[in-house]
Length: 257
Image (cartoon, rainbow, N blue to C red; front, side, top):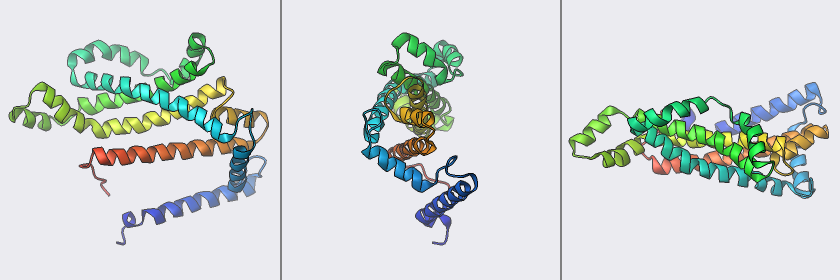
């Protein structure tokens, strides 16, 4: 009962308290013109909920960004996960697709912004495309890694019990790869948020990225930090949902400490 694991809420509250106290102290040192304190940022978030920016409230801007992220994320799941699983399981697929994948994998998603704008303009399509590229690479890579490096003893035991190749894949390889797949889902979600912000900063009239760029244009660091805090809260909420889903689908996985 005295172990740190038995007091997760207390430790979390303590770390947040230290963080906010450090933030306040740093604000006192550099001034609110450079770094607003937490109360100013919270006040700005409340103001943005009530006062429209470019004709839209904060909730409307959040919904624009969230829609872009979720559409791109869903497309990345239905395309990236099967591709990674196939490359990890089939040597033929790996030999055919692997070289092409390795060429495109190191290219940062943000580098696709000019191409996306040329192809799709500055409308919704280009923003969704940028988010899709960022999430797709991570999801494909993690599902490939999880499937490719399944413990050989699991495969051999299933073969001894008479499992055919289809059952080996669906009953052994995919479940064994689930932890790696869920890690990819979390990282892919984070990357999708990074990309949507970059796309909205470049060419957008709505979204959280637009709020941040407006804060820069208006010399309002409190508005910039308000947008960043909202992103952090949304990302944390989605990460919690994914962790709960992982515990349901991977009940055999346990924390070490």
